[in-house]
Image (tube, rainbow, N blue to C red):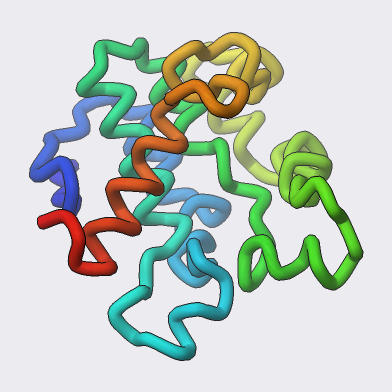
Length: 162
């Protein structure tokens, strides 16, 4: 599977588990979830999706030498985002802006992801535990693949980084 990313270039994804996950409904759904919430309604150039970001995080982890397990975790890390992304945090008056994190395990549990991962002998509970992945996630303000990708992606879309 050949993937072309605006930030990292072209990659040939040979791992069958990554191919299956990329084509799965939970990941494909992210094509309709905008990274910046409603901002794209005001400026069509700022149209980054959670799909692009999730693919980017997976690719960045790969470039940094992360295992396939961590690449899977990177691909899945935003699968629980809702429409308009963090706008839901304002709707639910969620000051920590972590609604998608609170529902992450339930969203994965209710999807085909556990079975898909089991088909390739992966334990999905280990995969979705962010504490297992030092490249994917770090407490703020430390750098991690998630923060680096969305920063580079936003800078590219806003015309600051080419």
